[in-house]
Length: 262
Ligand SMILES: NC(=O)c1ccc[n+]([C@@H]2O[C@H](COP(=O)([O-])OP(=O)(O)OC[C@H]3O[C@@H](n4cnc5c(N)ncnc54)[C@H](OP(=O)(O)O)[C@@H]3O)[C@@H](O)[C@H]2O)c1
Image (cartoon, rainbow, N blue to C red; front, side, top):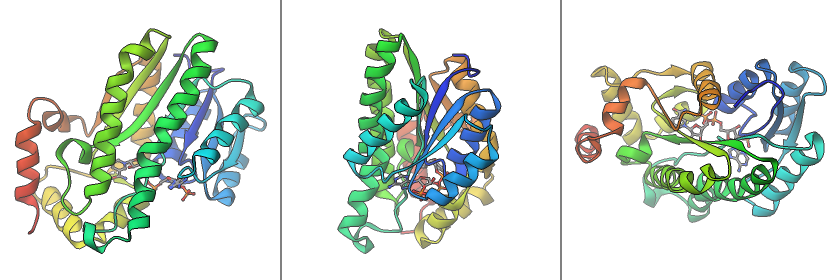
């Protein structure tokens, strides 16, 4: 899909990967609808982008009603949505038994329920428009699992299967999907999960063994834009993590468990 002249809705655009993706899409000539809870951060990004070609849509995506209002606000503002980037996400703060039930429910809601709701709304609109592109930002955690971040890993695995299961039916409508499978990306979320000792130890071991490095968020943003332009179905970053992603899923799961302190 051509980025120039398109309208993109990016969730989680107030910081991290979402903010960089919005910047990259805007640099390519898209109008961008920016969704997250922090209005101040969204508005400062709007001020940085081309006047009239960006709007801030504050919303808490754990709430289905707010997902719907956010989508309708984007349509009212720009008349269409050609690209949806389901990027907003939250990670676990540690082991399951240390997590308040409400926090776990919010992780499921923002990481999985919101992308399902927004994909449903966007797909209907895109089908009527004659096509579109939906990007779902997932994680290697949804391939291998991560002890110490079980709910997060579960939502990301669910999102990946949702994306791949939808591909046939949405392609028939001219809508393309990209599953973005990420390793470590230098953002606030990475810093937050590293504070959990089990996940922090696992990540440091993976870095020491040179299995993973921290990718800058603008590199991920560029890959997302390229994937939309090329209608790429799967993006794995870092690229060599495809080895985990493709035929070795069972082996990689056991390997991650071996890396994890018990
Ligand atoms: N960083 C990594 O290493 C890594 C690895 C694999 C996958 N990912 C995935 O990449 C995506 C982006 O993560 P990131 O690293 O950029 O994290 P981040 O810097 O923490 O940003 C998360 C974004 O999600 C938004 N968000 C969180 N809860 C929300 C809610 N209830 N309603 C609306 N927006 C909400 C946040 O905005 P507000 O707080 O303003 O609402 C923020 O813009 C996530 O889906 C994450 O799972 C990241």
